[in-house]
Image (cartoon, rainbow over all chains, first blue to last red; front, side):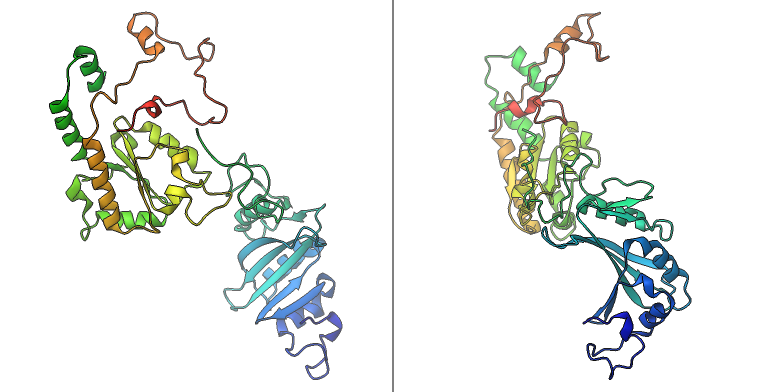
Length: 178
Length: 209
């Protein structure tokens, strides 16, 4: 179930499309920077905010230093391929956690197939270095500004990006040293 | 010059059954494995060496960390395509006589991982003597495999492992003709294009007993 920015200030009884009130964190964020939020999804107790690519670094940096947020721990960056015919095709998820306030949030960036560039958040959380390398290795998402963007899991001379939906499961050639 | 070469060149027409038995007994009673635990099967391999199932009873007294001091390589676990050249290099560093035990389903045939990342059987990379099924195999199965390998070792003949010195080694015996390896020698070590990672091993021409 989704709530748009215009429903944020309403009480739960008045908004017909949601049964769960948006969390105070999301409401406060919408008050502060509503232009960063494309969409909010709250499901299964998890909050996801879809962020446009150009506001990603600003949003992450804001969430990290914001007294309401204090998201100082980047749990994970993972990519997803929604399908070859989907538009947008790729998404990059950032899972943030606060070690002082114990709440989590997910930021999602949607990318088209032709333009898979995302600014890096390595300046905010050092762990993003390897997570972004993994997302590049397996999906082909290029992180602008990354200090060392190269493959991390697959061999260095691998061709293709393995977790895309059009990459065959068994790979392209069997491996043999004969 | 290995023992096999000396015997083959000095006593070409002599049957070597007693000598075979002695040498094979010595080899099978002290099969020292090289540590090559890759994944979950390594846990069961550790179990096989712990006190409950004691592999050291059968001669595998120490697991040598250096492949240069090991006799048998127990490939326990799935081999990813990134790890495969490393495995081949470790195998090449082991001196003859050497054997390979492929432990578990993943090392034998890729196991449950029929995908782009896992080599579908370590016998695509190294010659294997004993295969162990299981996911993971019980430690007793590993001990049984070591015993099967010991039976296989007993059936070998010392003449099987004779290796023919290559032309370079023959030339090296004459003083002043040592091969110069500066990349400009005419004689290149030709290897097939499908195997860029290692020098062709003559041990793959040995006969299996």
